[in-house]
Image (cartoon, rainbow, N blue to C red):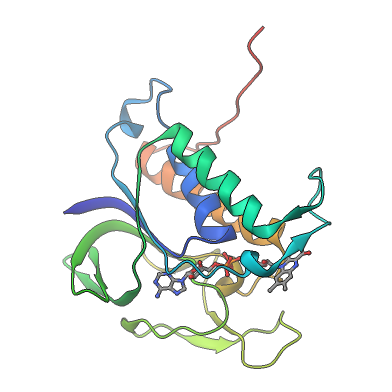
Length: 199
Ligand SMILES: Cc1cc2nc3c(=O)[nH]c(=O)nc-3n(C[C@H](O)[C@H](O)[C@H](O)COP(=O)(O)OP(=O)(O)OC[C@H]3O[C@@H](n4cnc5c(N)ncnc54)[C@H](O)[C@@H]3O)c2cc1C
């Protein structure tokens, strides 16, 4: 199966990227309709351990409740396939990326977003430049070297794996940023998604 975008990692950054992508649907934008979006996640986001009291505008909340809310927002838009599976290998073939999961299934995509967090990066295949994460107070955290979040053409990295500070807002913001870049490339013009109240 061929996808337009595959996101690997369903924490703060990966889910925020997915939410912005699917929110392009149903707006009368032909280029945005019938896109295939897929997200793979092992299910152990750092948000599961967090109690968030410093997310701007949000009452104090358990990270796991925030994860549920974002997943519900994505579901309400529709259009994202989610698989609770580990991605073990990525490759580049004829201008597309292929993703192999632990169960041996292979998926292809035009755009690939890596959002697997900063604890380790053990996905085989492409030779990506892994470095010590300079924003983490704890040693041993990693990041992938990138330029404006792009690692290779149409392959992006977001969240703590992009070397951002380990805060929900920073990581979510990078997911949104990359989603807007991908949508803009699909549309062939700059895209942002702004809604207004019904009056
Ligand atoms: C104890 C604690 C308290 C915190 N408190 C706060 C706070 O008060 N305020 C704040 O702003 N931030 C807080 N944070 C930080 C916040 O949780 C992180 O900044 C944020 O979760 C990082 O987002 P991320 O998307 O980079 O990674 P994560 O949210 O960790 O998501 C990474 C996801 O990728 C998945 N994954 C990894 N490898 C693979 C693979 N190969 N295939 C498929 N899926 C994979 C993981 O299972 C995980 O779901 C706290 C964190 C911790 C641990």
